[in-house]
Amino acid sequence: MKEYVVPPPPRTVLGVNNSEKTFPVRRIYCVGRNYADHIREMGNDERDPPFFFQKPTDAILPSGRDFPYPPLSEDVHHEIELVVAIGKGGSNIEQSHALDHVYGYGVGIDMTRRDLQAKSKEMRRPWEIGKAFDHAAPCSILSAASDIGHPHEARIWLGVNGDIKQDGDLAQQIWAVPETIWHLSQSVELMPGDLIMTGTPAGVGPVQRGDSIKGGIEGIGEIEIHVI
View (tube, rainbow, N blue to C red):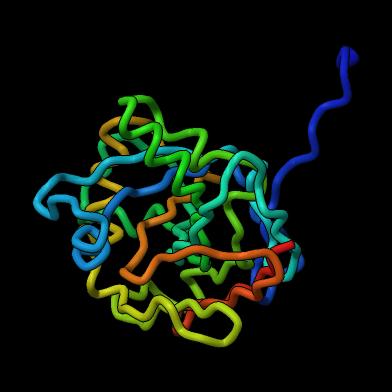
């Protein structure tokens, strides 16, 4: 077996409820603007079709860990999201079969350097600097669909220091999970290990050093991180 010239990075994995096995993370896709109330609060057009961006796999931050306030920014926001874990790959996946490709679900937070994202938008540049930084994808352990089914109506919420900031329902998504998988699989071939963060409801806002952030989705799980 050939040796590597540098040590390979550790494999990013997520824990799974009621299992000693873990879920290997391949890619992280994120849906932009998937709740009408969030689209309105950001001043955008809710009639636009879905679009996608990515976060690096090693941006995963397990629940319960510390979130280091990132450099270069003075305006970091929380965005609570449903996470879809893909268990079976495919391209051009029909909506009627899309849920057959889902292994399970989790709760994630799309941490965003809002000031750097805004600057990128003004300059018509990609969003990576505002979305794809270290620790930018806190995520809970996963719950298998075989255990919980495929929730399409469930409370999704997030609190900062005990004060609820985001409070919505999965039913408010413009593009439900089957539609999202269909759209995304037309552009890329989805593979086992892919995660899809499906957008956030209204109420996004800034976090500060010392904040305790806790959120959850009814029937799926909860996540908690501490800003340092």
